[in-house]
Each structure stands twice: as structure tokens, then as C-alpha cells.
Image 1 (tube, rainbow, N blue to C red):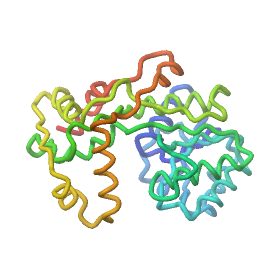
Image 2: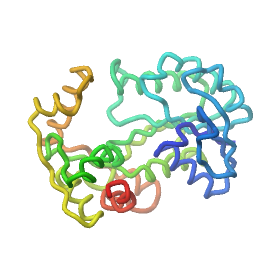
Image 3: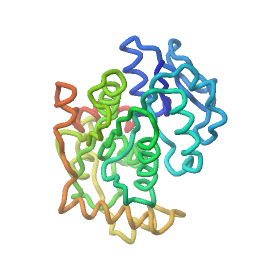
Length: 278
């Protein structure tokens, strides 16, 4: 039995679908089973990763776990949850992030570093998937594109190697079902680093109408796009994108090397999700 967390999201949901397609026994842990629209062959069990005491039924009889963690929000429960997983399961495939290091202590990368450390210190077999930017993050542009065909964002020239969630999940399924990635930290990327301007134009081609990128100055972006967010969070995101203008995100051959096929392009992703932008 393979347990999938985050099964109603894009990464976990894609992993679950691919496991189902392989005919493997799959269980999903969700907060509200009645609201989870999952295939009837999936064993859907109630549980909350922020509450380790709720996970007993979900982990019963489980051999492997595809772990999508509610980063930051559930961090206080992490030691107890990993200990409980280690008592029941043999292997965990953890959806981490590129750029994680043992020295990271704050923010999202700090959360991932903590999770990796807890898992590595356990008796579990593990694989840490470290993708670059998710193509699905551009869904944040969907309201503006639907309204008037405009993306109002910052640093149009920031180049990212955005990855399709189905490629992340495919490597995760490989790690769950074979021994080839035990103890590894594969960095997963799309096939090319393309600018945010090119991303917007690619979405436009997918939906059959032009999409314009309106580049916001940093101070305007900070004020309009991140109301109520801590200044450090907004400043960190804007600075990270500024750096990607001159130093594009890394591109690896990991996905094609592991899967034996090319990584899906951002154009592939945009075509698959065109309905979200219409």
C-alpha cells in the first residue's frame, strides 16, 4: 500500500493518478473525505498532517509514502509525524525544493531542510525530490489573464526552468516503485529556462489570444501584489526574481535521464491547463 498526501493538490494528485494507472494499491489521506473527488479505487482516509494523532488509520499497513508537506503551517508537528511514518512504513519520497541546504533555517527552504533532516535521521529509505519552479505557479496570473489578458508582475526577464507537475510525479512514482533513487536528491527541471515574458506569451498561444506582460517596479509590486504579507517575504521573492534575470535557473537532464523521454515543456503545460486561463 502506498500512501499519498496532498492527493487533492497538483503534485500529490498527479502522483496518485499515475499510481492508479499502474494498478497499484493507493491510499489518500485528506482532511475531509466527503469533499475529496478521487477515483473509487483509492482508499480515502481522514487525517491531518498537522495532527500526528489523526494519522493512525492512514498509516496502517502502509509500505511507502509520497509526502507533500503543508510547509510552515504544519512544521510544529513534523517530528512526531516523521516518527510515526517511520514506525509503519519502509520508504518515503518527499517533495522538497531545489536550493535546500543544511544551513537553511528560515522560510520555505528552512522548512524543507528541517523535513529532510528529520527523514534522513530516521530508519526510512528516502528520496528527496528537488524541483525548480512549478509551472503551476503561473496559475496565479489566471485572474488577470481572464479579465483583460494582462499579467501585472515583476522582472519580466527572470528566466525559470519551470517543471510540469506530471514530470515531478513521474519521478516520484519511479522512486516509490523501484530502488533506483533510494538515498538520492534529484534536481528536477523543465527542459529550458524561459523568461516570465515568454511564459505569458506561451499562455497566450495556448488560449488563442494575446497575453501582455506589464512589468511592475519593485515598490509597486511590493505594495500591490503582497498586501498584508511580511515585508521580508515580499522582498525575498522580488530579489530572487531579479537575480534570475542575470543568472537563469539551472536546467538539468535528470527528468529525461530517469524517465527515458524528454521533459515536458512549458508550452505542453500551458496547453494542458489552457482552460484555467480562459
